[in-house]
View (spheres, one colour):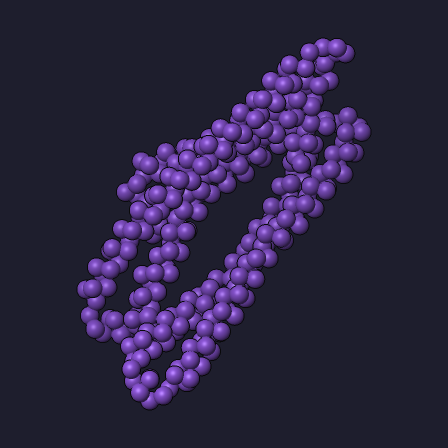
Length: 280
């Protein structure tokens, strides 16, 4: 993680601008539930029969405008994040290429040529994706979390505590998935190196393979490694794919509890419909 931050330092001015846009977009997203609650709890009950609905229309138009501004800010920030990540990885590839050129024969044998090829291609692409995701979510997620909690407390502290109580379960799901998934991806990286090694050996010795009529043998070898790598990657992806559904289940259970407790508190006059709508 420190390596990625160091890699992005040359672009800190543009990075700061992108993070600022992300923060503003997150704040815009947080404003919409507040305006919904204000409309339901304050504006609609205060209307008299035959009175103009202009304030409600204006509030609705303001929500549309805020949503549009938030969308523009997100798109602009995402484009900037992708640009920064691509330029940083471009520099990384150049530095990595120069470093590989200066390796001794012994170092090349230690790392292995397929592994170095994989470092130059697959690994740099994964770093690019990680750098872009960190920029997109590194500010947005904390702002939404902290701002959402503070805004929720302003609506109803009891219902907010219900949602906060769900966070340890979500954290546990992420921790367990990471604990199991990271070794699987390391294993998959090793198998990918093996696959590149076999492909490189086949290309280098193609004439010898044809001369000795070993095409079928080499094909079987490649097919076995490819199938093993494919099965390993599929299993790792299946493990990580469980995270979102399990998190959704936990959060939906939290929302059901919020609705039940909210209905009870609403009947006692301790909360309002708009607050419950904002939570949902």
